[in-house]
Each structure stands twice: as C-alpha cells, then as structure tokens.
Length: 118
Image (cartoon, rainbow, N blue to C red; front, top):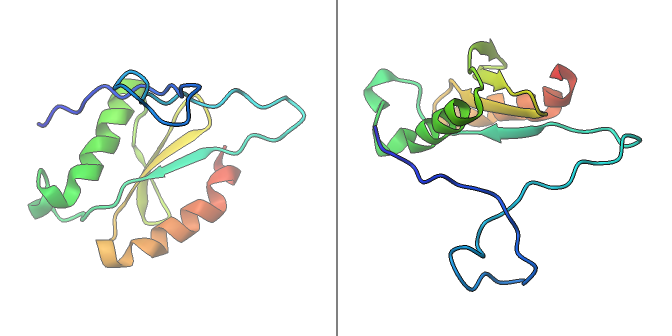
C-alpha cells in the first residue's frame, strides 16, 4: 500500500508559504459554545468495484482510509449509499458506494444530513 505523507495543519501568519514548514495548515479554533458546531464532511470519490482497488481510480479512497487509521475512525456504517465513519470530533469520513458519475446521489444526501447524524 502506498504511504502518504503525514499532513499536519498549521497556517502561518504570512499569506504565502515561503518554505515547506510554512505550508502547514492548522485546524480552526473551536467556536464559542453559543454557536452550533457543524461537522466537517470529507468525501472521497472512487469506484466501489473490487477491480479498482489499489488503482489510481481509488487513490482518494486510500487517502481517507489513511486519515481514518491515523485518527482512529472506523468506517463501518452504511448510509446514504456510502460507507461512513464518525470521529470523536465533529468529522465524518465518507466513501460513496456509487460509481464516480453517480456520486452526487450520495454526496447530496450526506451534505444535507451530516449535521443531523452528530
């Protein structure tokens, strides 16, 4: 399996990154308790057929699997034509189980209802 770089998230004060260290992006600060928190939805697009496993067609599926593993998120629920996993922070990872051209069916439902599922 391909190893992906360890992406960290840190935004520098300058508007443009001058070095690789400056290019890191950080997660936003938590919102005040008075504002509702909406979950982040990360959707990977690929093709569900086994013949596409490990190919360039499913590189984003593999990337979401790597994120899930790094953050301890199990992608073990099927809902809205997708495999989904929720983290201990308001984040949802989704792998639509439709082919690329039909992925909008799943993504549309997920984007409208993701906040309800938390």
